Length: 326
Ligand code: SER
Image 1 (tube, rainbow, N blue to C red):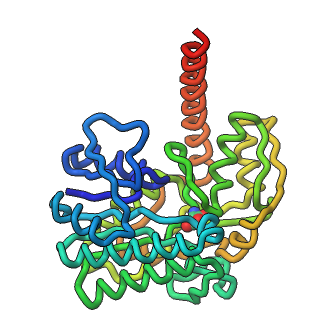
Image 2 (cartoon, rainbow, N blue to C red):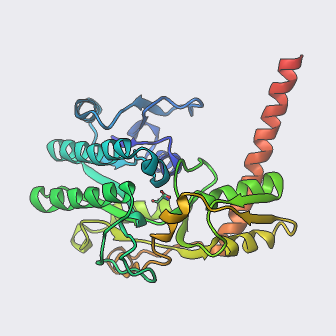
């Protein structure tokens, strides 16, 4: 059985779809803190709080889990507001999962982040091995998680694999509490209102990736020959980099009247401490990493799906309103 933790989150929703499609619904156990409101037919759901070791072990043992995609985590902006929560979920959660995976002989995927880097890291083409002195609690939890992964891999032979995700752009599930959320919000606001007030400056440039590539990276990394895996902390990974102004311009090619203004908040400092671009040649060399989407292809596909999603939501809202008033 494949276990996904944090499966209602931004990556979990798309990854669960992929894994269910590939392996069949009987082999994927979809878990989160709460049962999802809208459940898909033929899916196996369960509740799992990864901060409780006993719960993690129990679910692995009872469901015969052999592979874990440990996605449960608190993102950067929420982590700055609730540092203790971030530490508990991100560090104790990954520690519990790694420990249980070792005992029950499971393979593990766990996402790290560009947030492991900080103000003292080279910002352009940030190398794989470089300074990791993050300025945020979120970054501190990710560095700690990476070191725990490496410890378990080298001391216990645990097959745990990881990537440092850049900002991820998706339409199926919204990101929650991240610093890169503007790159998703901008699409939804552009389609809904033709206007967006962005919480970082126009010049803010960050490495990013479209969700289909993020899912592909997880699948490719987990399928890679173990002898080729040379990084047991977490692989640098990127698809492209853009500034908020460049994304707005790319959206404007499709929605000419779209306007964007900029009102930076506390997330600006976090964004400013992260790299602008990433050198991911280790991922390219070790497991042939190559993204499919460039900026323009991503924008075209995102807008198509965001429009469908918003139309569907509006149609559902109209039906509900009618049934309430009728
Ligand atoms: N996208 C994440 C965030 O903004 C970074 O890992 O928190």
